Image 1 (tube, rainbow over the protein chains, first blue to last red):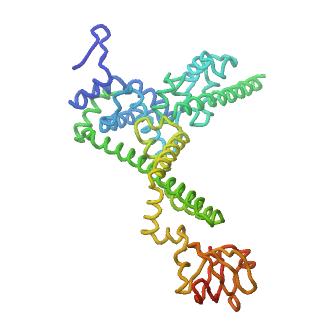
Image 2: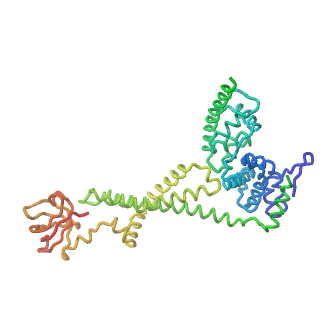
Image 3: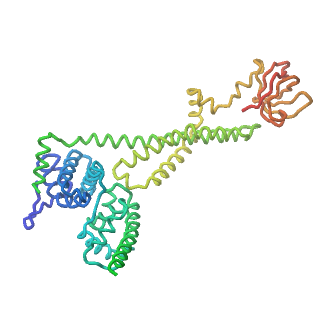
Length: 202
Length: 228
C-alpha cells in the first residue's frame, strides 16, 4: 500500500516495502522508478558526458535490469546504492560499446565540486577560489578515470564511503584511498591549470 | 522527458518480464560458498599431508634427514598445494567476491583468512591421521603421484630377485657393509660391478644395487647406483 505524505505528496514507504510491493504487483514497481529516476538520471548524465542525450535510455535499461534481478536485492541494505550500481554498470557498458570515456564534468559541476571539496578538510583545501569552476572541471576531466568516478560520487552525488563501496563494488578502504589520492592529483592538476591561466593572462 | 515509470512498466509488460526467482540467486550464492569451503578443505588436506610427510621422515630411524624429505615435500607442495592454490584463488575470487558484500573485503585479506583457516584445519586433520590416509590413498590411486612422492623402498628390498638398497656403512676393500632399508646388515661384493655413484659408495650414502644373493646376508653386485 502506498504511504504518501499528505503534505509533501511524497511516497514515504521504506525500500523494503517498495521492493516487496513490486514483487507482488508489477504496477507497484513504478513507485521505485518514480522515487529514484531523478537521481539516477542526474548521475547517468554525468557519467555519459557527451552522450547525455542517451541518459534516459540507459536509465530505463537500468530499471528493467533492476526489475528482473529484484530478488537479488539485499533487503538489509538501502536500495539506492544497488540501483546506482546497476545504472553505473549500464552507463559504463553503453560508453564501452561506443569506445567513449566516462564522466566529463562541466563548469557548473566543477564549481559545486570545488565548494564541497574545499569545506571537507581534505588535502585539496584552499587553492585560489574561482567563480566559474571551469578550471576545476578541466582538472577533474584530467583525472585518471578510477579517481574521477569516486570523486564525482563523493562530492557531486554526495555519497558516503559505504555507499560508494556498494556502488563500485570495492572495499571501503580502496574507496578512501582513491578519494585521497584523487584529491591530491586533482589539486596538482588544478594548481597547474591556474598557473597556466595566470601566465596566459600575464 | 516522458514519464519514465510508465515507459518502464510498459516495456516490462510488452516483453513479459518477471523477476528471476529468488532460488536462482540463493543457488548461485550457495555455489560460491561451497566452492570457497571446498577449497579451504582441500587446502587443509594438503597441509595435513605435508605435515605427515615431514614428520614421517623426521621420525625415520637410521635414515634421518637426507635430501629426500625436502625433495618430496617440494613435490607434494607443487602437486597438491599448487593445485589447491589454483582452486583456492578461483574460489576466493568468485566465491567471496561474488557473495553479497564480499567485494567489501580486500583480496589479500580474503586469501590470508582462508589460508589461516586451512592451516588450522590442516593441523587438526593431521591429529586425526588424515594426512597419512590421504597420502596413502593418493599413492594407491594415482601412479603419477606415487612415482613422484613414494620412495621405492620395497622395490629395492628384494635381494632374492636381485634388488637390494640401503645405506653404505663402511668400505672393506672390494666389498662394503650395507644397512638395508629393513635395518638388516649385508656384506656386498662389488668387484667387477658397474659403479655409477659420483664418489665411492660410502660417500654416496644410499645406494641401489643389482646383483645376486650369495648368502643369508651376502650379495654379489653387478651394478651400484645412487638411490634417488
